Amino acid sequence: MEEKSSVAKVLAIVPGLAVMIGTLFLLRTYVEPWMKDAVVFGQKGWLVQVLSLNYILLSIIAGIIYRNVFFGGKIPDWAEAGFRTTRLFIKSGVIMLGCLYTLQKLAKVGSIAILLISTFVFGTVFFVIWYGKRIGMERSMIGVMGASCGVCGVSAAVATAPGVNAKPSEVALAIATILGFGIMTMFISPFIGKALSMSDYQFGAWVGTGILNSGQVLATCLAFNPTFAPGTAVAYGEIWNVVRVISIPFVVFIITTWACKAEAAESCSTGSQMSLGKVFKDRFPIFVIGFFGMTALSSLGWLGAEGSNTLHLMREVMSWIFGIGLVGQGAYIDFRELRRAGGKPLRVGLVAGTLKYVVALIVIMLFVSKDASF
Amino acid sequence: MSDKAKGKMTVFKTDRHEDAAAMVFVSLVVIVVLTYMAYVVPTVTIKPSQDGKLVSIAVQTDQEVKKGDLLYTFEYKDKKFVNGQLEEKLAIKEVKASTNGKVLSVGVKEGDVLKKGKNAILVMDHEKGTLP
Image 1 (spheres, chains in turn yellow, brown):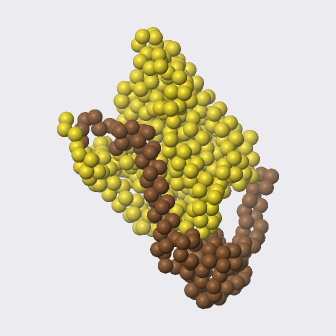
Image 2: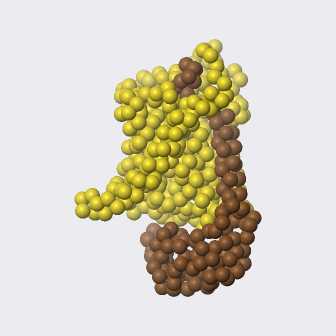
């Protein structure tokens, strides 16, 4: 197959990216303001206040509609390269979220976040390994599902796949299952949070622990409290999310070690050179360094004072970057893929995801105070 | 598009390249925003960061202000969880100038009810090279 030039590769991104940006523009400029004023069931703004719909959730829904309705289940060739910039935007948004914190604030909640996340991430990984073996799922599928359910639906599955010799179709199934589960939790979590009178701190901690994807954590927190500011659900949820993302290399190491031990030594392609140091070097998600870099700039006051117009503009740009990424992320949720996933992977994903989500809620309600740490 | 590229979730060679690209992209965004705010934006409009009521305004049109000077005070409902209970009490917030500048216009008067992000309280010019 002929390789494209760099210019052609960049140009190939334009149509899909234009669809993502255009969609977000329409949602933010026309659809969201209309929803705020629309009278449904005799109540003005019912769609926003009761259904917690905002442009972030709408972005994901629009992406799902593109993929499953307009595109007939597959992103067309003309748009595919553009939609593949999705994770670039999500990662950029996560980096920019660093401007919501100072290093002192991170230190305050960091230890609780590390304790909770470590318990839930590794607990879920071991549960998936145990349950997957019990119902006779293939080892490679158990590996990617363990990473998906334990850490993060997309990044961890992709990072674990080579170590467990997973097929691309297995990675796709794991991602589809987890993103599908995330969609359900995105809509029900704000209702549960409000019904239980959770504080922003508790809600952020729960969602950051129980939901498995950076974009979906953000969308759910904004559905609960639509403000991008220190001390809001999104600020707490993303600390938990970043701690979870940092655990990716450790999870890759554990799952790969498990897979290699389980296989015959000669058929394990990575076993001979594998070490935690090497996995860390190869798999550490370096974009989180950018997140801490933004926090350092914020701590030094180089991004403007809290409440300043400069910081306000920075957060506005950040919300656009996230929104673009989330239109793209919606387009990676394919209902046909989910149906195909059926059977064992779907069962493992749903059981592990639900267990983590519910146990995290119980632990947060019992042991995490409503009072915010900052 | 090559068959190899199909099915990938990134336009980059590896995840590591994508991570690096995200950091470069954000660096550019930050530089553009800071440069725009420090040198390009002609005036800034100060709006309330939350709902409340204007208690007093400490500046007037054409007045020069220095960083840290009081601009206005407003009253708002402070909601906070204390010992697991949501407590709501009225609080006063003093808003100070984040940079040296000049007040171009005052859009509200004492006692006005302020809506978050809606009312233009002050329009200000700021010293070039500083972040308003």
